[in-house]
Image 1 (cartoon, one colour):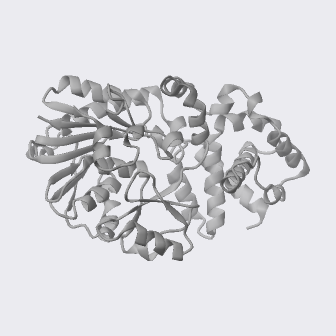
Image 2: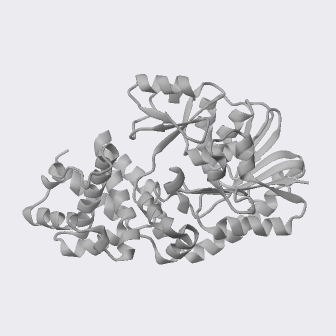
Image 3: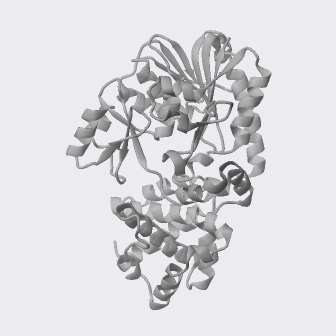
Length: 439
């Protein structure tokens, strides 16, 4: 595609995502369906440009008025340049800027001069809001938790997330899958914490690979893998994934159970559970039973009360731990929406707590970084349910031979009561988990 045509397409996609009426990934997918002639490199440029604009929205809104032409084109220029910078830093962390030849071939002289002026701006000269690019309601709770680590966290959120795979241990060994991927010119390294994970260099197409087609690998962030590991489901047990969604954790749990026992995948969205079906077929699992429920108090839930060995509540949340993947969330969420989510999380955990039998394990998890969705929910549950004993997540992960388990945790006297994963510390999405055992 001619550079100017690609830039115009980027500008149109930026315009569509910035309406914030729908999730950015859905907008991008729809755009690609409507423009099937686009090649892989063009799709990457379009998606990464749109996401860069969402990540750096406050800064780019500040810089755009000094340029010329339609605003979405100016934003697309800045987003495309930021994507090229990030690509350059992957191969050379000291690089200030990526190549500009391709982009500048689409620009007129005035636009080139403006881009050069933007490139010359020092981060140190920017206002704080143009450096962190976060809504103000989100800044204070993050600063309160992170202190001096706030800015490293901001830097991490300004980049795209790595691509992690989970090897299906029911079918394959990680080392053998890694060698197979290397033969397909896909470079990976073993994830530092999850025993099942591989981190992929770049963003190669995976769905046509034999390893993917036969269910040997699934795309899953390392942090999400650790939550499934923390549940520690055993062969032959009765297990519930209470908010299964598309089933990423369900599949990981089923593999640890060696496809024995019974694993219920509950969700209020039949549409999300439909996305589990092809993944389940590839996985080779026969112990998974997906079931759409009307609400957390559904009759199917009541019938299992007191009968379940392990329950995972991966609660619906703000998703702010996934900002590297879903940068639009910080502009689509609000304090009011957060209050509604907290009420929903409390109700879901309360209902799920009926399921574990005596000695059974309950895990509450979110992909949020906010304490009101995490520690506050967990502490309130502990106070209200004396029949549940809090467990130390760090100790559990250490028993599971997770390297540096304590470094993945925070809270309590030991400092490791809760799992607390951060993008800048652990190179995972932001995750939280609390664990209890029924007395």
